[in-house]
Length: 365
Image (cartoon, rainbow, N blue to C red; front, top):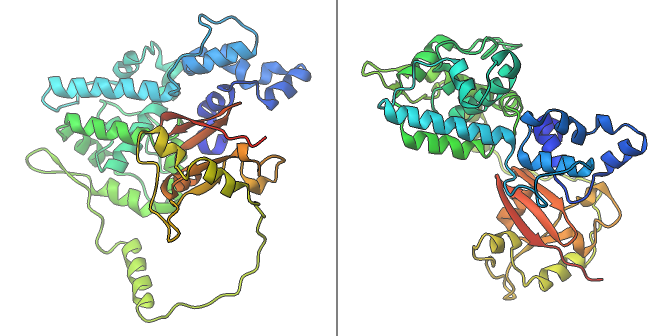
């Protein structure tokens, strides 16, 4: 979870549960609760959301201002990201799309950071999240609009090339930013983990050419509006794709004999599908049509998702109370999307692309 989410988000997800985690209980029994996520959150409250602080204090036996946790389950990083985007949007509206003329200290003040010597890393992480969202949208990086960017931003690290920071900054400052830009960026931030380095490193590892094309494709026209980045037509990636396509046009599919292990899941999944009326529980919770297409036998198609993966071979993972029924799209999203699930006594509490969803757990006992 640390690798996929970063420390702040991992801590928030870990503590925001109905019951104390097994990890906390083990540390408490060993008289090491000071090392727990809960104690870290209490010791550094400004770094975490009100909801995470509420759960941490309750687990540690400390008083809270209310009997129920705050409704919002947004990470503190996302809350600050949205606040900053709102400030950018208002600034662009007041200045006809021009964002330039501010410092990182000004941005820090928006978030209540009086000293960047203390909160510089936090602000740098938020800025980097926005820059990744800009990359995803094809925009110049917002972080380079500031008069002086962060010193360690856009460092070459172990790459053989360096970012053209000066031309990227020129494009960012020259762009006429519109309200629609910030709405698009906001939607992208919901797809990102709290720690910006995670998506950047993954993208550089898996698709470095795309980032390079984006960075070098940001240019300023004579009219002052930056052109949208366009991939280099003869990039190495394009040449590799062309070679694969040429080979595919000349070959027929081949057969391979493969052996492997498959875990027996038993009949419970089919029983849960029937009990749930062959509905996608997430579609149903979102107010969407819960039934997919009908199969040849007239029964709607639905899939069984084991919340606690059966591959971990834990006791109870094959039970009905561990299964939710999902359409094919939401089933894939559960496996590959930005999703977290908490198993409560009677429900699965899901955070799907930043949106909280609650679905019932079925018990056959």
